[in-house]
Length: 92
Image (cartoon, rainbow, N blue to C red; front, top):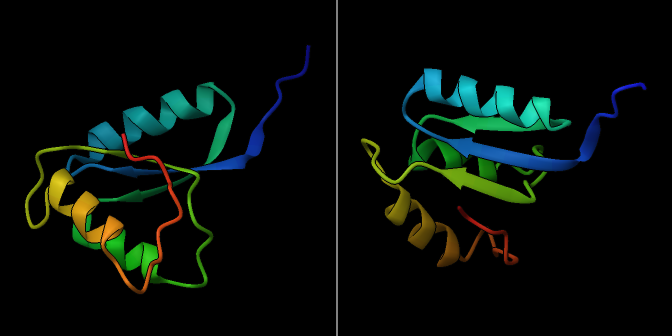
């Protein structure tokens, strides 16, 4: 049976450890999710999300403990952003 890749669902992975991002990306790819964007911390993630040239993710997987901007700070900044206008994207 041919493997089906699902590029309809886009996932953002936010983690300060590149190895962890690699592991999560690998697992998502194994599940058929190959449209994954990565960020090393909450600030980088907000910059990516503010880039209108980049398609919005359908779900965000976020580490809680990170330097510069942790997961809770990211969530609060994203949910309260006037420019991003969050539309209920789940953050896990």
